[in-house]
Image (tube, rainbow, N blue to C red; front, top):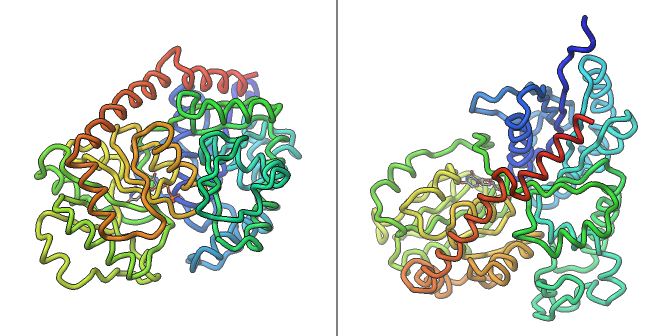
Length: 448
Ligand code: UDP
């Protein structure tokens, strides 16, 4: 074999949740578009193995994750444990796979999800350029990088989870925006310790890649740049179309949207993880119904009390008739780009937030946990394209927020600001824009 003509290989190791898989594959796709000679290999766990529908030129290789066949997390605790399970079970198989791949075709870059620090260690051990990719916002990453400082300054442990007090080190954030998963400080302490450790580990990576850009998160990016002495590539927003769904998509929503007037529909979806109980479902349902507005609502199978099929309040669908549609999973990017959609009621996952910005759709922000609270703060308090909702969903508030976004001037003003921001994002991805240049610099690093 002619060794000089072997293709340059890039290996990607995504964390197996929807909100992590999509941006990692988008990163791979974007790098391939910039340099079509790259050979792309995706190493993935059996759990949530990606089924890619569009014809991407990726080679997919499964890694034994040691989880029972068809294992599904039964709740938040299982999800929090997933990272530890994968860390202990996948280290050895990842090591052998990467060594084998590197012998076949040189691996010019190993991209791993930064929440799997062990993968970075494996890559470094093998002498590869181990690139940590974090799929959350730069601001939440900056919080995680400053856990010790937040303790020293007395912001942690959190005394009042609803405190509006500003955090002087992290300007837009208030104490209530800190990315907590629980309101029990004893649970949170071990979470802070783990995430802080993980973030420090990222400092040993060959580079840090963030799905963001200075036009959105300048302060946070500057802080990270200052504290991390490794190259940082802010290449967001990753926006190429990747058809990767872990749940079957209900495409009838697009034809339903075709029949609705422009900017008349609120798209309502809380991502791939957040759950609800029956009383929250009732508040959402009656809030949407009472708003008098049109809505497309995603109720994910398993998201209500863990049941496969959610029960909607009796009489609800009769009352709303053809003004509302409830589906199990939607083609979200197509929905947001549809001319009938005028607002997005979101949990503010980072992907959903960016997708909303890329489509200039203003948001009703119902952050549930973790970094969603940070993203909600950015959308409402910094970019001013969202309305913050209370932690406890309540039908009267829902009705008011939906009407403000779809029927009042305030919503139109946010749409206008959103369009301006969308143009900024688009130009950052064009030649000469900050994200384009970051991508080019990344490709050069891979070639060096
Ligand atoms: N998504 C989708 N259809 C849906 C709901 C969500 O395609 O009905 C996608 C959405 O476009 C986004 C991802 O699922 O890319 C959710 O990621 P995000 O970071 O917003 O939230 P998470 O699911 O991680 O909480």
